[in-house]
Amino acid sequence: MKKSYLDFLYERRGVVIGEIEILVEKDRLPRDGSCEGCGNETKAAIEAKRNHLLDINKSIETYMLIHK
Image 1 (spheres, helix red, strand yellow):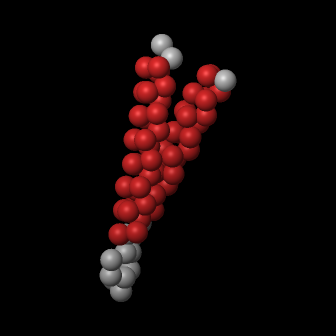
Image 2 (tube, rainbow, N blue to C red):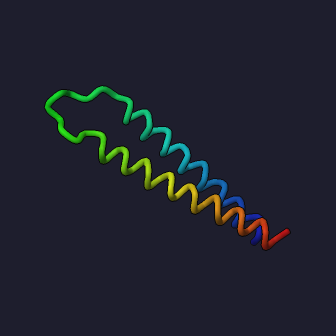
């Protein structure tokens, strides 16, 4: 059980990192001039994913401290 949970956390971490990379690439794409505020949604999504990644990292750290 212990190893499978840790594997799950690392798998989720990899998925979230991949999602962040996709969003960062999307944010780099050029935008047309008629779009005001474009990119704000992408930046917000990147920030949300980064916060999710921080939560996963904290969970991994806590798990490692508990199960030394």
